[in-house]
Amino acid sequence: MLDKRSKLALKFFVRECSEGSYKILETDDIIAHLPKKFKPDPQVIAQIVKYLENGEYISVKYSDDHQYCLCPLPFGRQFVENAEQDEKNKRQARRTRLKNSIGYFFCSLFGAFFGTFIFYIL
Image (tube, rainbow, N blue to C red; front, side, top):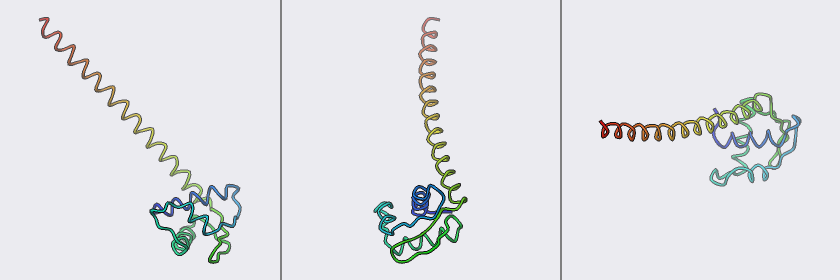
C-alpha cells in the first residue's frame, strides 16, 4: 500500500513519462511537485523512488544525487488509473447520496403536509 507522498510522486512520474519511455527527472522538480506539508527533501525523494522501484511501480535506469532516469511500469500506470477511477466513483456516489437526501427530505415534507391536511379535513 502506498502512502500519500508515494502516490503523488507516482502520479507525477506517470504524467511526466507519458510516452512510456525513460525520462530524466531532476530531484528539485520532484520536490517542487510534492506539497510542502510533506516536507520533501532529497533523502525523502530517494526513499520514495527506492520504495516504488522495489514495489515494481517504476523502473530506474540510473540515479545520482540530483537526477533520476526512470520509467513507470505497467503496474504503476494501472495503479494510477485505478486510483483516478476510484476518486471519480467516490465523487459520483457522494453526488448521488446528496440528491437522494434532498429528495427524501422533500418527500417527507410533502407527506407530513398532506397527512396534516387530510387530518384537519376529516
